[in-house]
Length: 133
Image (cartoon, rainbow, N blue to C red; front, top):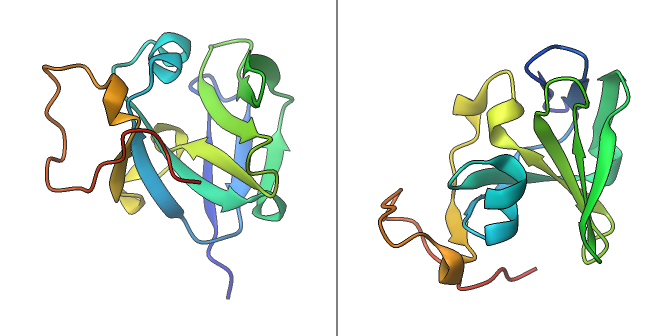
């Protein structure tokens, strides 16, 4: 049986389903995630591209760098998905947009070279200065 998880934006205009295990769950400390989300850290999980399905609405897209496109709700602004051409067979999904984010605890920190010096979150997890793809 395939694991299935659902999620969506704050206003409900966008909904998605993930038909794949939730894996590679990382707290990202990069400045681009901070600036695009307005948060001090964004926690992402990675799923195979074929395992992700929009079930309601059409997301707006923003190219935040030459290799990354971020998808968000044009109504409420919720940041949901990131596609990077560096990993073209997968998508990153914001853990906070899951209906049950408690099912997706982080297993590492990425881009800690950009971490805010006063932030202390899950200090027991392994850290990467950037991100090993």
